[in-house]
Image 1 (spheres, rainbow, N blue to C red):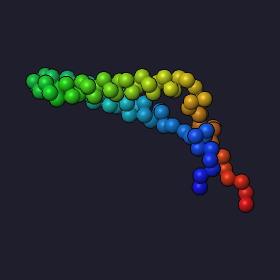
Image 2 (image 1 turned 60 degrees about the vertical axis):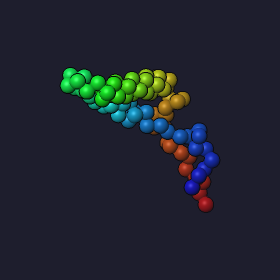
Image 3 (image 1 turned 90 degrees about the vertical axis):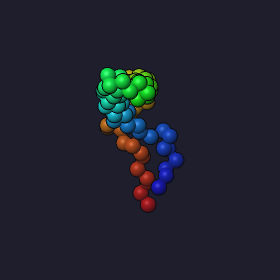
Image 4 (image 1 turned 135 degrees about the vertical axis):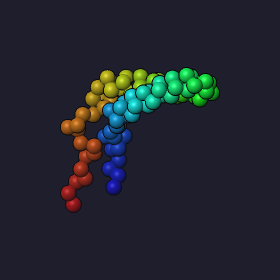
Length: 86
């Protein structure tokens, strides 16, 4: 049931997105390095572009996390206001 306060009480999984981004950077660096060493320049370029995109995403995520609880509620803030008793 929607309460109408979803935009105010919405939560974002920024910490999970951060760690998935770190995982993506590790694999993109690995892929870029390996493909460059074996001479597959097209795949190395693709992994390098992916590396760039994931790094920019990580910068945005870290910026949002550092903005504080206004943008990222803590664990003690409930995700929604419970509906009133009937």
